[in-house]
Image (cartoon, rainbow, N blue to C red; front, side):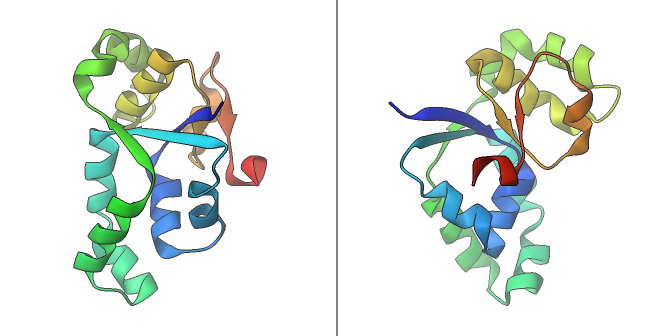
Length: 131
């Protein structure tokens, strides 16, 4: 049985650039999930990823499509948006959707974002915790 992990934008970006995060995505013991909102946030960083990796943005989009990520629409986690807003909205509004998905799935969150360290009641995984 696979362990479900919700993935924030920063490990996805790191995975697209290369390195440890990329290899973690292809470990068979995990099932990775994220929000459509997070994927749109990642796409905003394509110019940065292109600059860092020397790869064209179209190729980065293709690489993103190859990452084994299940995308959840807002409809799936909408019942937890209010609670997520209360927990992290005053710290960073961009994190509300991903936290709502964490609450909906009851799964750990893979993120390097230190803002989540302030949220009680969730399991936060850093890349070093997964390797």
